[in-house]
Image 1: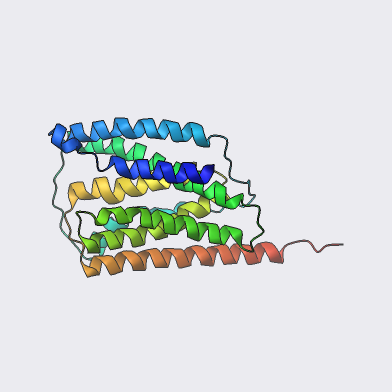
Image 2: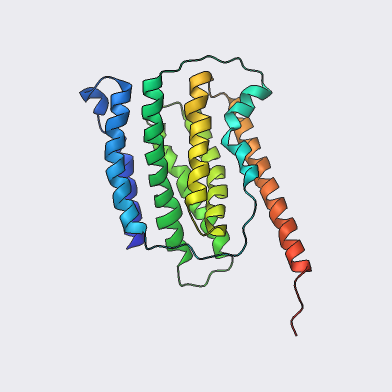
Length: 246
């Protein structure tokens, strides 16, 4: 069953992060490569398991360029508050982390925007506004998936992460439905991780303060309102120009 596959794969995915690989090898780049190999096996299994699960086709294909500000929100934060860079770049660590990010992003997209999303959309029970509830359900689950990071990390930082990953998932899940594909959501999910995490931490070191937390939530909320406004304008225009039934 898709739901059983989702939960079992999610538990395996989360459990891999607790493997004591750092006790076996010392360099960070080596740890990243070992984790990448393990995650790659899981990704291949998930890909084979989900290849026949299709998102229902839609005619509406909205623009996606306004998602780019969301992918570089941390850079917007340092520009807004004029924070000076603090470069700490190591090529071996960066590229091994990049490879790890590619694979982990793929796993999360298959889990949440393929297994869970398709299962919910294909429920036979008639539910009014099913797609809206599906987007909210997938986004809540995606945000809560990051709650595991409370273990050993700053609570405010993890709370902020849960908040902005929820907003991120609202966009990614919406576009998975509208484009009937996870390719676009994977691309923007990867860009988000690349710009807001890998590149950003190579050039800046900031603490997760209440100011940063509030900024992240407000930016996500503004982009969400902007998305809803564009969708409303497009929907009203389409309804206005619709031909009357004979």
